Image: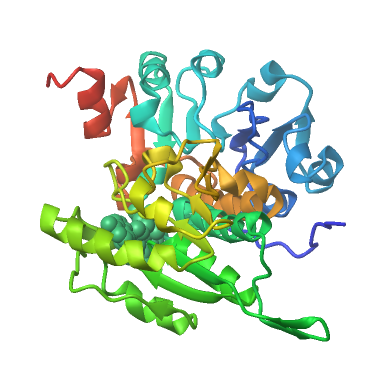
Length: 398
Ligand SMILES: NC(=O)c1ccc[n+]([C@@H]2O[C@H](COP(=O)([O-])OP(=O)(O)OC[C@H]3O[C@@H](n4cnc5c(N)ncnc54)[C@H](O)[C@@H]3O)[C@@H](O)[C@H]2O)c1
């Protein structure tokens, strides 16, 4: 069973502040969400550093962090949402708050979590109108200093792992080579399209399961990382490295070349895991329905880009589609399927973020001038601070 470690690090140079910052962690209400925004190990560090931490009753239950472990770590269990939020200055969440949840927040409350602002405009407008401050973790810049608070990466790691496990579970074959008295089994071939954070984790997991792994990404730099994991990198004479280490969109000629090469590799794979994304755009189409028709019966596609439009033409988010004997899975929120560890990683991301927001004397900083805070500040003092979201809310009008 999980136990709280007894060693603690105090970040306060002058000990706990006279008025502790009150941090509240609600139970996630989104159906299918199993994660929780903090874990007992992190709560213990926060309380020893002078925070008052409140956890809504059963908030960690589905991630296997029961109330008594939070109590042992120094948190108070709140029996109701009103009790939880009364006087709370900071609310830590996984999923964005709903409009009804925003209505429960007092003016000036700081909410931190994934905000998915572009698809959640009503709640963003409500936070603006109620003068709630919201930090969106998906807006944390991917700079070296922000690595410890990079929740996109920690959760993509969990998603990539689960994608390989789902692929294996749905595949009618063994993944490793086996030499047995009942004959020799050839290893399965797993193809990963998109070798970013999730793709690299899927490669590592499929390798550990004993498969032959091939991978492709439009960023040439990904080749070295793929090879270092023992997988084969499929080369195409395209390097589409765009801004900030992300991929740019391909030209129509490049797309045609890519689909031709990808099609041949997909046809020989037993499991295809797709993770290709371009920030702020629809996911690139890598597998057409004609390509699916060329695949072997029993083959599996796990499309991690299902929520952003899908890398396979036949993907339906949240569903499993069957075509030509091929299963096409469009899983949603895979990190929630490994909630114990994805919550642990997420909680540590939030702990690092709090260290920027609350100074060493235990007070919330007055100015959000730090580069990371400024970039992730979505709503503050009755204004939407994130330009693209503000534009969407005003219908494109300045
Ligand atoms: N702190 C940091 O410095 C930091 C943290 C995390 C990630 N990163 C970098 O950001 C980059 C991407 O991260 P991510 O996983 O969040 O990306 P992502 O989820 O936006 O995309 C996943 C992958 O899809 C690839 N892709 C896009 N279009 C494609 C296409 N047409 N065909 C094949 N592949 C395609 C991208 O190159 C990327 O590797 C990487 O370079 C990663 O190393 C940096």
